[in-house]
Length: 181
Image 1 (cartoon, rainbow, N blue to C red):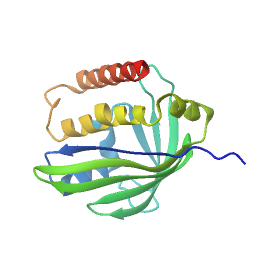
Image 2: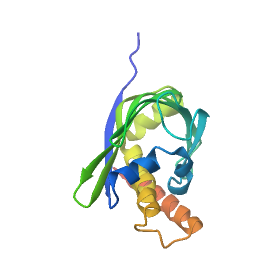
Image 3: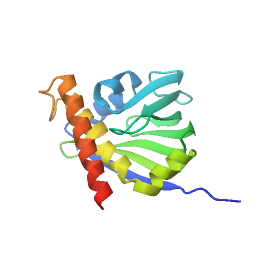
Image 4: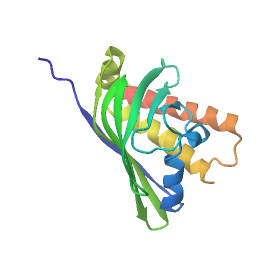
């Protein structure tokens, strides 16, 4: 029997906002489109608030890439510290989580792959090419940068179209750098 690869990573950033405020944003799928440019999130069962049993679908594409889709289910919520998720089909399966910790000046937010495996040949190829490095680029340049902007940080002076263009340019540049290494 062939054993599939399992990937683990932790991407994190610090935000100048209280943990409860950050948690409220992350736990509400209706906010995601306002801060996550390259990924769309759609409730499938329950929602938009992330509570145990809620299922939702991720759909995203890197600049110039093909759309990738996968489902997730909320397993546990420990407000305001953690939301445990399971990727449950589509391109990926495995455990992930949002983790939030109070730090001086704000909140450290992490998105953690606790053990994610690709299910499709495209997802297998993606991990073979970049490992988790592309995920880290996307989290840093898109999700975390967008969340900081949403909280009034860098980029908040830009209109939405200008911001989204900037995110696509930054992610594309970072991917080109990955391809050179």
